[in-house]
Amino acid sequence: MTKYNILLTYSKLILIFILCLNIIESAEPEHNSSLVLPMPKGLSMVFEPVCVNPNSGLFDWKKVKLGDPSGGFKEYPTTMALGGSFPIEKNGKKMWCYYIGKYELTKKQYASLMTPEKPLPQNKKDYPVTNISWFNALEFGNLYNQWLFSHAKEKIPKFDTSYGFVRLPTEAEWEFAARGGSAVSADLFDQKTPYSSGKLQKYEWFGGPTSSHYKLQPVGVLKPNPLGLYDMLGNADEITMSLFSVEYYQGRTGGFVIKGNNYTTAKNKLRSSFRTEQPFYRSDKEGMLKPHTKTTLGFRLVISALVFPNIKIINEMSNEWEEYRSQLGSSTPAALSTSSTSAKTSAEGKDAFAYLDRLKKRLKKKGITDREIESNLGHLDSSIREMATIRLNAEEDSAYLWIKIISEQARFIRSETSKLPNIDTLISIADSLKDMQKLEDYKARKKEHTINIAGALSSYSDSIRQLNTLSSQPVKKGFTRYLDFLMSHNDGEQVQVLNRVQKHFDEYQKNKRVNLKQWEKDILF
Image 1 (cartoon, one colour):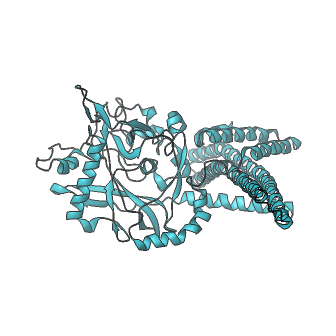
Image 2 (cartoon, rainbow, N blue to C red):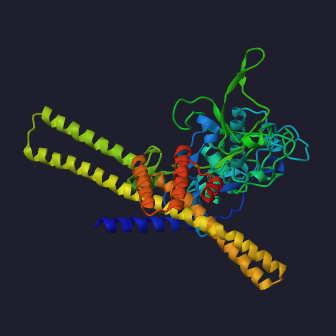
Image 3 (cartoon, helix red, strand yellow):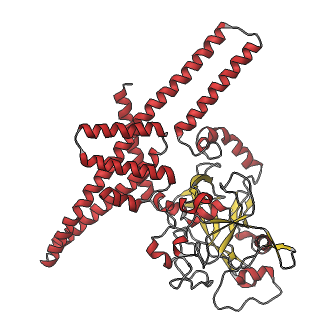
């Protein structure tokens, strides 16, 4: 295959990839119906399904990125793999999902199990239960599981033969749901909150006179997030099952993680990624150890199930294991770091050379001097090096093509946006002349251009993400190569566009987050 054909193939694959991403992004899933489970004293608890990925196998999962650079080193963006517990039918196909409480646990719900001998609180409004410990939350979950199994076993969701159970959410489960999960686009998922900042007070309680007035508020008063969940950010802090590590799942562990901020948090500090460590115990005035509680501390529950409910599932997963590890599982955070694909391949190449060197030394130590073996090892060494060179050259070509595509996407955004003022003028003229036919035509044309701009911006951010999967040296060469091309064609305007592309790529490489609104402003300069 000639170099031209290789580049042509790369171009086609990249364009197909972009088109597929846009199709997936535009297909927002609808909410499934809520799951309502009974409780003592005529109460109930409502759960929403959080669907993670299509059910393509028992190892199905979704790669998600937690954290936000605004939270400092404790919230540095980190990739994790998340899966669901129950295969649920959704829009004609099965999805792996877990369930999470639609509301923060209320005082009445808490009292119905923790103090069953007492009458329920008589508040007209349902407030979140607070001032509790991690151990209180675990005890409540245990009591509720026992009550459900005794009184409403048939209503509990199942995975195969295994009934689900309530528990505290993990940090990953909580943050995935808070960000909007699979119900939002990748760009919106990357934002601090799944809402525009100007509308935050319609969805979440935060500190100040425009929101909570620094007081705990009843559950479910404001609008829900894209998954139908209320008060995920603000109001009460929420306890998770996870132990705190600075880097999420690596390093030493300490207390437990709480998420969500609370009703005293400033509006500009509210974010899905917020995480802080809380101690399990504290000393009272007499110096005695007691479980740690906090006036802002509450929780909500999730429903999950056993991974291995029976021998049948174990055998099925065992049969799928090798295929999973060679395909989907080869890119999990558990198998790889968050470095670029080529960096991972390079590391594997270094391991191969180390293995070869060890084998040569072992053969020499054992006194084996077979010339055929030595020749084959030499060929293997040469082949690995040649493959590394071919991969690097291919990656440089790929980087150049991606940079060119991203720059052309930015050019298209500029072109489409520049047409809007003229269309607005035509709309104004048609409106003043009462020419309704032309007015409708111009409005339809404006809508078409607006949709084109939104689609191009989505493709632009997706392309930046894809460029980030390549190692830094080929990307650097790709920018230099495309700049030389533009300079040779005296395309000064596109050079300025390329400078913006370079700026946006550097930002994403550093923060691992898109900033689409600012990027759009930069492109228009």
